[in-house]
Amino acid sequence: MAPKIGLFFGSSTGAGERVAGLIKQIVEQIGAAEVDVIVITSEGPKALEGYEYQIWGCSTWNIGELQDDWAIRYPELDSVNLKGKKIAIYGPGDQFGYSNSYADALGILMDKAVQQGAEPMGFWPIDDSYEFEYSRGVVENTFMGLAVDEDNQREKTEQRVVDWVYWVLEDMGLYDPAAVEAAE
Image 1 (cartoon, one colour):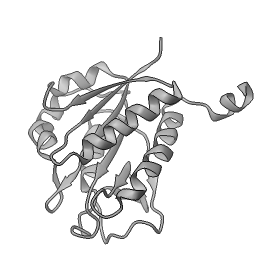
Image 2 (cartoon, helix red, strand yellow; image 1 turned 90 degrees about the horizontal axis):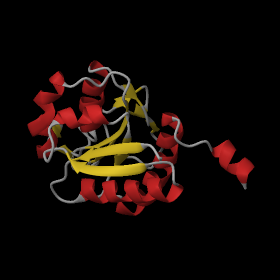
Image 3 (cartoon, rainbow, N blue to C red; image 1 turned 90 degrees about the vertical axis):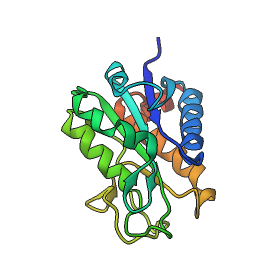
C-alpha cells in the first residue's frame, strides 16, 4: 500500500488550489504516494495528526498575512501534535506588489510546524528568477518551502512545482532517484 500524503491548503483566488492539483498529479504520476487534498477549513487541524507526510499550501495576503482559511485555523495549531511529522510548504505570493513580504506565509507556517514538533522538508534555493526584497519565508538565502508567483510568473509555476515535488519526495524518503535509474 502506497504511503499517503495529506495536502492541506487554503485558496481565495484559486492559485493555491491550482498548485495543490499540480502537486497531486505529479506525486501520483511518479507513484511515490497517494495524495489526499483537503481544504484546511473543511477539517479541523487535528486532522493533521493523521498524516506522517504532509504538504501545506498557503498564500500570503496583504502585507505578510496568512490566507483566510489558514488564518482561521492558525490559532488551533497550538493544540496539534506534529512530533515527527514530515511537512513541506508551498506558498503563492506577489513578489512585485508585495516585495517586502513575499511568501511570508512559508515562514509563519513552518515556524509553527517546527514549534509543534514537525520535521521541516522541501526548503528551496532562491535563484535569480525571483525578484523580491524581503520574506519571512527565507532563512540563509533559502525559501522554507516553494514560493510561486501566479500573478507575475505563472509561466514558471509548473516547472517549479515539478522540480520541488521531486525534491520533497526525496527529502521525505518516498522517492529514490538512484533506485529508479537502477530499475530502468
